[in-house]
Length: 134
Image 1 (tube, rainbow, N blue to C red):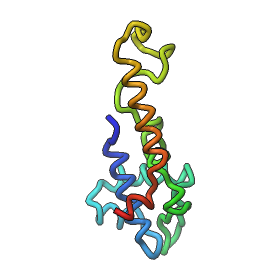
Image 2 (cartoon, rainbow, N blue to C red; image 1 turned 180 degrees about the vertical axis):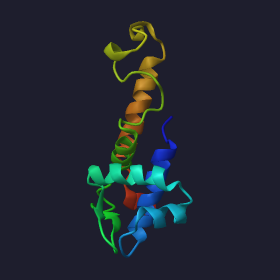
Image 3 (cartoon, helix red, strand yellow; image 1 turned 180 degrees about the horizontal axis):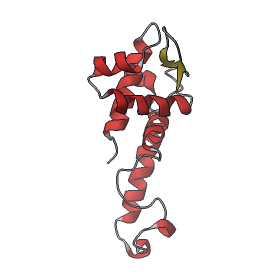
């Protein structure tokens, strides 16, 4: 599945944080988005680990964007929270990695591979700034 709940929540959080005037803690953000605090905290930590967000500790602490909205691509966000590049299909990205070892005779693998390449390219170009403009 391309967009999981983790990816959805990461993108929603980034939208809110991009519009915020000061750092937001995970509790405030979870209440605003009606998302489980523990699940959201894991997502925010993953985004901070990959330098998409910066976290601040203390009374006025919380999360802010580490990069500008123009530098944050949806491919980076989704790869970060999923732990791997997003995939539309369970198909392997190359014939040699096919789990069934039948890619050489699969009639749809070339099509699926081309489609995945186009989606990856689109997500690599789509930035948080683009989403904020819509």
